[in-house]
Length: 468
Image (cartoon, rainbow, N blue to C red; front, side):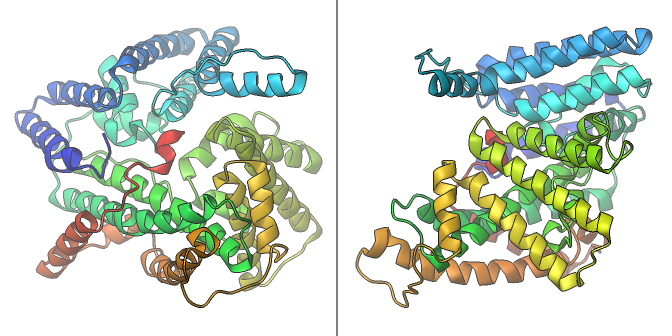
């Protein structure tokens, strides 16, 4: 079930919110939490009921394993839990990728498994790994099954994050949650802002960008740049829109989820970018990969290697394809260069540093979006002008697989999206919601955004990160 679907907006969300607060009003917080667990299971099963037992069984297994880890602090038990969870993710997500790679390298014809990827398994796996690690470290003080089930299954974050730690939600559930009208209003505001980002901006951009990436003719200079910058804006508005909606829904239930975006395209270094983009993923990679690999505690070279390995694994986490691996490699190289510059004391003017960062991130988005590394190489060649410099000024016949028409509207799209980025992200949406004051003007603004989002909803209904 999609956040931007009619059945979610008009039925599932109002029903679950209303019954949650009804139970809370009756001081039946335990019943309220179990009700949300049931709603979340139904939400997940809407996609495919076959994987509901997998989700439930995995959650129960990791809960009791974490409880045992907290008692024993057994390193071997922790390794067993990590191997199980990573192995489960690997089987569903990477088995066919490794079989195809082996076939290509050896000439064998091993049959692929064609397993359907369970929805949100990458996010769910990282969350339970964080749970096991926190239990092993002695950071968990609450082993209530109901609160754990609520935390891991809470439908706003279940499919595409934010990636939660124990401390993010479970402590909030230990006491009865009291309705706060301002908090609820902030949540509604965030939900509508996220819906607008997704339905009006991201989906509109996608209609233009998809045609360019689907072209069977090499893209020329402007076309290549429109595709690269356009996708960078699309994935930002799509994923930050989802995150805003998730956080907003959480606030409607009186539950605060962690911030996941903080104006990432304002970053002035690649390290700054990863402190602002997909913050909960960056936190997980730092805590459970980068630091265990040595971090910056064991010398400059070890730190660069740790950062590079972390980014490659982070790239592979996004999907079972060489394009994601190369995306991770590129960010690993960017971080290595940034560290070397910092080490030797290179300080660029802020505007130049921003330009380098934005161009680096944009170039990496090309391989992230491309169907193959070969396609990414072709688009990069186009961005360098190696495929031609022609600048079509008017739409004409079917010219170049209809990319001329796409180019004209695409340039307008880039202009408008940059303006919207500046307007919406001068502060993040969470900060905007906190400064929101109840008024007739703000209510009219919210209603206008909501109905505009419904009216202008594009054809790209699903969110980009649902595939991960």
